[in-house]
Image (cartoon, rainbow, N blue to C red):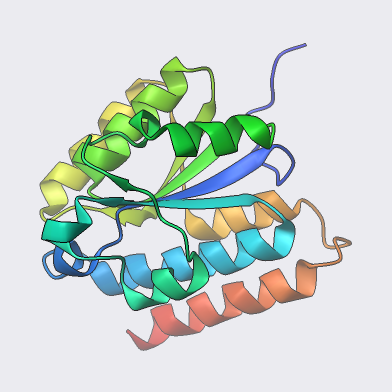
Length: 191
């Protein structure tokens, strides 16, 4: 049987890549990115997904932004650009039976892209959310998205992921997920 390209909550994880204080200062669309990352973390927790995060060289680039730090207390440090070199990340994915990984974070053309490509090589289905990844330059982000799509990584959006994880309006957490989407929609209209 062919595997589904749908990213439901079953056997899925959210991996937040390097959303760190010093990096965020120069990121394109950082307010939108941060709002979407926080919404994704909250929804993933509600729906029981594995929720993981990393920090790239935190002694030089600072720790995660407070919003991520408070929602994901444990964030392994790394010096490699791709997250799979962190045995702890892979161990958690394998231990939870994860087959599909949704990526959010920065920078799209470096750590996010290299992580997506490595996860794909290891047999995971991977999606990146175009409105929850970014770089210091829009051009780098846009090329990274194109490259990843050509490599077979699914490109989607935060709202699409939230409803895909939920699957049905009959899900016990549907109202909570809908409230998160309404907050995102309201923020879009006011920004």
